[in-house]
Image (tube, rainbow over all chains, first blue to last red; front, side):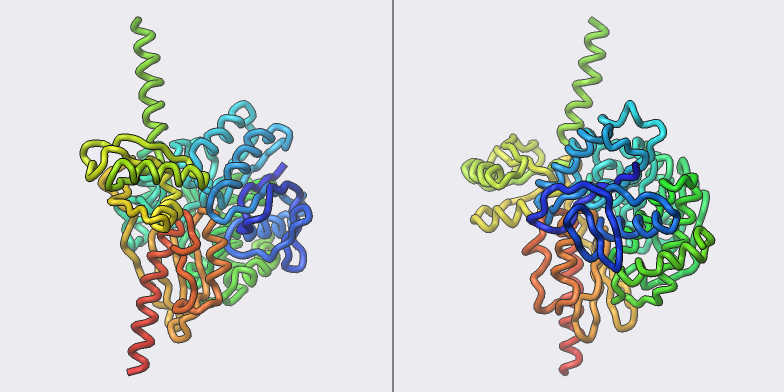
Length: 287
Length: 191
């Protein structure tokens, strides 16, 4: 089963788990409905749209309300660790969550015996947790931006706020050098999809694909464009696309959706999500 | 015996490293303050404990409070709210290190984007409206984005008032810079 784990920004919402649906701009899991905005909701909505276009089952969404105190994040880690066997996970995408080293370790330990045939993708807080725990090599794909790449490249940092040397004008060559530095630490997954003005697909420390077209500078300012990318990527992996191919296609689809939305820096992510079906058509993944 | 030593060495070392990863220390002025801080934070559900600070960072009392670094913003706010002013807060992984304090601006014409570490805030320069918040990975970021986007930066509550995490801490840095720049722009327009 394709499973997504991540928090939603609602203080009173307890743990919910069920098939997610996205219709008419509304994301639904169990009895809870919301309009996607920055974070896990955008990722799940993008995954739902991609699954529907590819005639796949929608993702199973395990979520809980957390506005930052981390209490329900802990419940999410525990739930996945305890139930991953019964969920029969084939693809697990982990997203906005309070980075918790023991929580991430519990999830990864619980999966050791079933790891073959399972793809783990981590972005946002789950990516921070995997790296901070020294377990990034147990994830299949991480999706950092350039600033998060500096975090992955700093062996001592346990959060992007504590990166020792952050190069703020991160041009193409600096991102590539950070990629190499990150792989020297050994705390990296086999594959990275580094998102930014130029997207890099990295395998075992080598850049194997570079995607820079269409170029939509405003997307950098729009909250959720990285979340939509991870959602599309996860759905493509679930659809059977090989990992490097899925990363390349996802980067391109996300850029095309951005282009079709004709955004400026004030555009809402919902306008870009709406264009994902057309972007999937443009790359020939559906009719 | 040799085998036992090897096992001890292997597991002893790894346990110590695991123990410190992602932890920070709050240094307070007196032991009594550290004890109060520990009790207060525990009552609010934070995973903390009193520890002896390493000699190189000992500034006041010889009891410090160890906490999960990612909770830094919420922890500091709670302590200050109760009149406990930390002398220092340090990362145990690297004792001399502080959260990044650099911001970068990108001009999109009508819009200004300010980046601090992994967080970005974008404002309409003329109106002062926060139009987008991007980045981060901690759960308070989507929550703060909902409360900030669409509001005027000169009137909105700062992320430091409602956030808990290091992501919110960096968003606060970006927010402060953007606020200063909007205020400067608006002063120029008035004169």
